[in-house]
Image 1 (cartoon, helix red, strand yellow):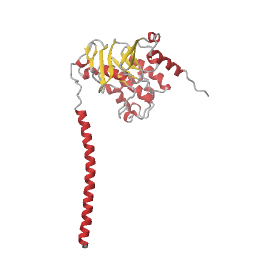
Image 2 (cartoon, one colour):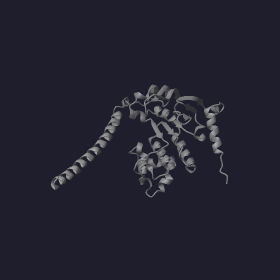
Image 3 (cartoon, rainbow, N blue to C red):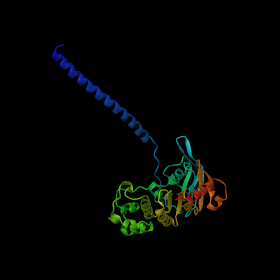
Image 4 (cartoon, helix red, strand yellow):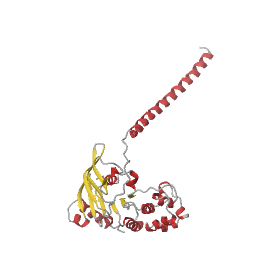
Length: 307
């Protein structure tokens, strides 16, 4: 072939190769988009929780669950639990990891709806409440505390955005966090990093308790609130929790003896069922999970490092 034809063929081959390479890249991108759209559609097709209802102010703050069940796909996580938590009492929920403790608390707080049975607050099914009306009765202190990228003062007054600074400081003092906040460069105007990364675990926990105190809800949910706190901060945190829970209905998940032994009732949850129920004294007289649990904790507490 002549030189001109050869040059045209070479140029054309480069054009065709570039087009095929682009088509291959787009094909890969289209597969990713297709999978992403399918996953997004699955989320959009998930039935929404009905959060409409009445604005209700219950006369009592007792919580009752009647034969409730809950499943993840086809696996029962909560299987026919019934319980009653009287107003202004403390209920501790203990049990093996994976037994259903956190799921049970999420159902009592109506983070999720039960598959069967009913959960009621003050004698009314929680589904009858408008969601804002229901949540106005609850405060939460979780094991993992999330703080917003904002000032400490605004994180504390999150439940009451218009609260005056005097109330913020009063809540901080009750939660035993006023001293360390005052020692920060900008005090209550110190901006914490996203998630509160600039503070220690104990400091975040105490700010979370101050936030719950500002809300002053009659029902308190504590999900292993002292699990990740170092011994130096534990006493301060326990004082803060005692101030928070005074004269409240308290539901707590706990693994430490000092946080459960004074509870009005203890529920031992295993495999989605309540397998033991009673006070610390009565459960210690029974052979079972709770007695073994306390024995293991006491044995661990007695360990010493030899020098």
